[in-house]
Length: 315
Image 1 (tube, one colour):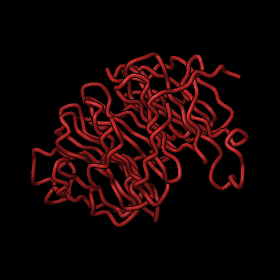
Image 2: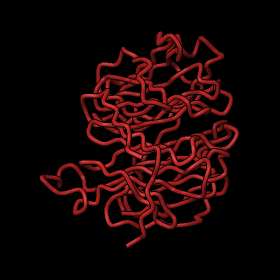
Image 3: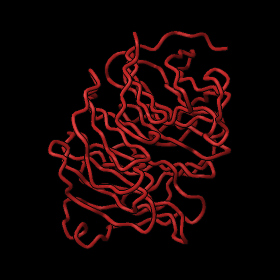
Image 4: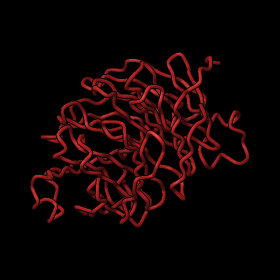
């Protein structure tokens, strides 16, 4: 089946994410636009307007009432999903790289970049306490003194967050005390993406070291490694099958007129190497939907919801 091509951004895609039910798809890019699409037919339902810089991250809570975005305009914003109204604006000293709602949708976390002399922090806000939002003061702030956080997600039941770092480390931070519960280093280079399984028992990482790895979300125990020939920019776990969708390719600075095959711009579903819809540049973001054989990949600046992944033997 031919993929549906969605064009709603002017710059390259930075993250794509389904809501819990899988009927909505949220996309952000290196432009100030936040789009929401109907995943069945690719119809654009609306746009959240307010950011003034590249938007690095997006998340929706479990009942899809609220949307959270983080941007290079040094802000994290909370939106009403249905109306598009901005509910909260949280200012930061540097770009917001990652963000997310906890299991109950009451607590949000976001991490900031280490830039312009400012340190990388992970901030936690309780949405049930309006004074935190009004004063722009989180109830907890975790400093990251070494390498900055490049990807982060909430762990099981909102008890911790799992963060991937620029140096390849994985840390599990307590959402109550802020202490590091578990620390492992299974990657040799930057971790580009972390995505959880639907039941939150496992997660997959994508790294610049040409691998994607599967971990236990409670112990951070390494389970499996998926090796590729190019840096992996994003990886997602299928909610329906035992498949992992990987997207990657050469970095933009190395890409000129390279063909998709030579540049390794494929989107692959593994472990027995199922591959398919190819982009015309590095695949930057991937997401797996609830519909059987439904996945998405984002490149520059297009989005490809792929209803069917074609089987392809592993070379």
